[in-house]
Structures are given as structure tokens and as C-alpha cells.
Length: 306
Ligand SMILES: N[C@@H](CCC(=O)N[C@@H](CS)C(=O)NCC(=O)O)C(=O)O
Image 1: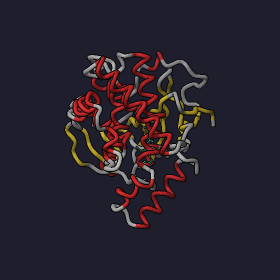
Image 2 (image 1 turned 120 degrees about the vertical axis):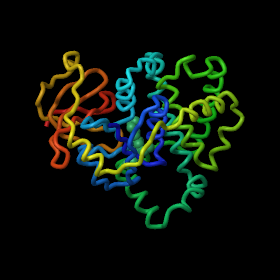
Image 3 (image 1 turned 180 degrees about the vertical axis):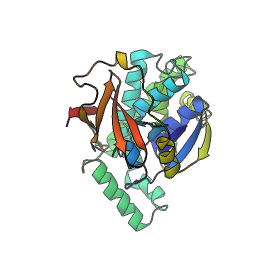
Image 4 (image 1 turned 90 degrees about the vertical axis):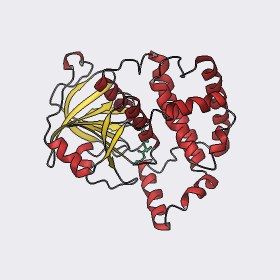
């Protein structure tokens, strides 16, 4: 059974919700708080605190890079990465650089003001405190709204030209991970009424956004954190093609930590299971859900001995 631990406003979650729609999958939605603590998720994630987290039985996937690959593997799709290097690099660019641009724009004062009505003063302060902890007091965007605006219009013009040449998708006939990664950032911008007009006038881009949006979110059923723990508790982790996963100085059972290198740098401790050039798997014993396997991407994570 597939569980997605997420919250509606999370843009990286939108990438995965849309992928679930693209694959027409049935899934259980576990809505988590947009800030810590998340007491029912932490036993499964091992402390990993970014959103979203995907769970397939007792296999727990952190970061949309490995989540997307897990879903493609789950349905046996090899087209998601058919663009090879171009698809991967475009997705990485969108998930890092374009992400910083849209965060800088959606969190500038005039854009924030339109959203703040939803929050009480206390909620706004708790959110700011949580995000300061997430980023180690460094601004996640790291660029001014003016610089972000310039970067955005440059990027939108490039995307528009590319889509006019390559339609229906960024790399041509096949929808790829590049489309999903670019889309969720522009979806986030489009959610903010102050920033929405920035996307006006790009007709090929607008048609492509509609094409992506129309994939929907699949067959989503509401669930909760306890049901997700129970589901993990009655499964054993599935293992994957371990023989090919030899690219690591660690051997099975070594005690290791896996930590994101950029933000939300909370180490997850477990026993090394396997790693290849894309993925790291560690095993953990939990009191509430038995043994789980936690999957992380290789790129952007630090794997070290305890
Ligand atoms: N590289 C990560 C980035 C995930 C990310 O930054 N998610 C945001 C929400 S869209 C987040 O974790 N915010 C803090 C939180 O939810 O605790 C991925 O691809 O999953």
C-alpha cells in the first residue's frame, strides 16, 4: 500500500501527487503538519524532516529524487528518465536553482501578505521559527526578490522557446522527470495571487502547465499517521537487486548515518543495506512499526560511519 506523508501547500509534494496521477495509482494521503513536530512520521523517517515522504509498506523514501525513481520502478516505467542526462540535469536545476527563485518570490513581503491572512500571529511566528531551524538560520532562497524576478523571466522565456520547439513536453514526446520538477515550482508560483500574473503571456508554457495539471492526483484516499504506522508494522521491507549495489565502502550491517547536505540536516542512523550510484538504503528497528528500510538519494546526502 502506498502512503504519501505531505501537506497541501508543499510544492515538492505536488511533484509527487502529480506523478501519482500520471501513473493513475491508488494511494493513501497522510496530511502532516507544515512544521515540526511530526511524532507519527518520525519513527518511520528516522528523523528526516523534509516533506514529502513516501511509504510503500515498510520501505520509506525520503526526497523526491528517490521517491520519483521508486514510483517509476513500482509501475515499471522507464520513460520517466528516457531523456537521460538532460532529463536528470533539468530536474536538478529546477529542484535547486528554480526552487530558490520561486521561494524568494513567494516569500517576498507583498506576496507573503496575501497569504498571511490564513495564519494567526502565533502560527506565523511558529512557522518562521521552524523554517529558521530547517535552514540553520541561512536564507534558503539566498537571492533578493529583484534578482529572483530577473532569473525567473529569463528562465520562463527559455522554457517558452523550448516548449514551442519540443511540444508537448520539455524534451519532446515523452513526459519526463524534467517536466515534473519544473512544473511543481511554477505551480507554487501560480498558487500566489501576487505572483500568478508573472506567468501570463507565455502561451506554450500555459498549455504545458494545463497538460501537466490535467494528470490529476490519482485515486487518493484520506488516511492518517497511525494507519501508516500500522501498515509498516505488518510488512517486511522489500529488497531490491542488491548484487548490483556495490559502490560503497560499507558492508551490510555497518552502522551509518545519512544526512542531507543542504538544509534540514538531521542525520538518520541505521544499518547499511546497500547503495548504488542513485540510492542509499539503511535498515532501522522501530518500536512502533518493526523493521523498516529507509531510502535516500546518493546525490545531496552524506553517508558516513557512526
Ligand atoms: N530535495 C528535497 C526538498 C524537499 C523540500 O524542501 N520540501 C519542503 C516542503 S515543499 C520542506 O521540507 N519544507 C520544510 C518542511 O516541510 O518541514 C526533495 O526533493 O524532496
